Amino acid sequence: MHNDTPFYQPGDREELLAGIHNVDWHTLQHAYGPADDVPDLLHQLLSSDEDVRTEALQELFSNIWHQGTVYEASAYAVPFLLRMLADARSPDRLAILFLLTCLATGSSYLAVHHREDSTLTNWRKLLADKGRDVDTQLQQELGRVRATNEAVATGIELFLTLLEDDAADAMLRQQALPAIAALPSRATESVPRLQKQLAATDDQLLRTRIALALHDLMDDSPAARHFFVNLLHGNEQQAMRLVAAVALLARARAHAPQQAMPVVLAALRELGARPQQDHTSSADLTAWQAIEDRYDQTWGEGMIGFSLQGLMAPGGEATRSALLQAVQLLHNPEDAELIARRLLDLVFQDGRHVPVTMTYSRDGQSGQQRIHYSVQVQQSRQPHELTNAQREVLYVLADHDPLWEHQSNLLELYGLPIARAALRTMLQ
Image (cartoon, rainbow, N blue to C red; front, side, top):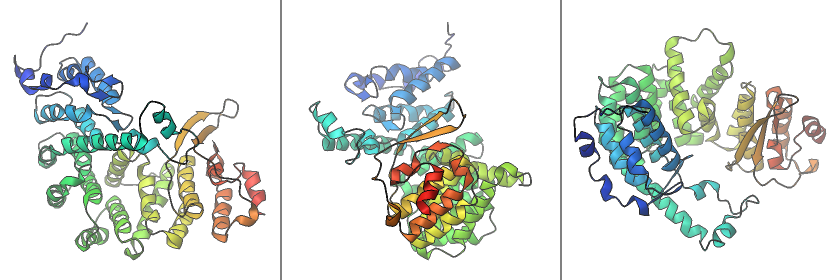
């Protein structure tokens, strides 16, 4: 039994959640149907019992933000979450801020999963059987995504104030940054204040997170490029220079400063050697950790994926040459798989990166990790069909031992043999 002693004086919680019962939650949908449970869950976030709050948070992460997808009820829950965040007495403010960040970056289920050429799920037929239309459903879902992001955007001043409060909890200040970065519609307000905060702080972790937010929010104007050029050439730590390099490659592509690509490759060299490192300064480790934390939460591919974004930006021969250099720097099998996908997309799909669904398991006999891609495979290619660029990439991948430390059907996606020996035979 939980001892639920209020954190507030009598009536305070009701005031904080005023209007919650004016929302017709029953007519709103979340991941599991009508959102009747949302008011109680929001009330439970203010409980003095940590177990009650934890369970309520888990439920909200499951129903109004389900594996990255937002729903009709999501936007209606946001104003109450913002009030809790604004009240210093609220418990678990960091978790509430993280939930708001996730809601701001939420997606439409169909936008992520529907592909016209998919042989796995025919969404048009599936929805038609239920009397619904894919295009109409998609537009409705995207409307809910916009509504949720706009609801979170009303808290932009709160997020900026948290960031600028030197007396605030450090983790709360840091988590404010991905929330701010998820609101491009408020960039006019946030970018100048982020730049001012960057100049005012010498906290390297915070500086790195601010630079990442600015990369997400700033446009590709000459002024933005000049800003990142100054970071690239300034007396900054390596992590900050990596952010600047990727930002410039994303904006200027082939016209980015010559130093940008080498900075990214140097970062990959350090990251690829990380298991053997023992000489990195604590300040540099802190700055690198900031990137890892920020991008594991937001993009799912960590620092390696962020760095590869920079290498992919110029396209063409510049990207192929850089990726072929980068392959040799990455010795972790998962990193090898990631860069192999980038290379194969580049030479077999003109750089188009098609989202895929991946499942992981482990082979019972060998203990090897298995990675299975659930996506339409291409027709088997013949050796004479391969271009010189494709052959060069495949030679490098065939010789890169880390790529073959686990079992994967990655090459099958491009019409290629998935066994190493068979691939080598194809290239003879």
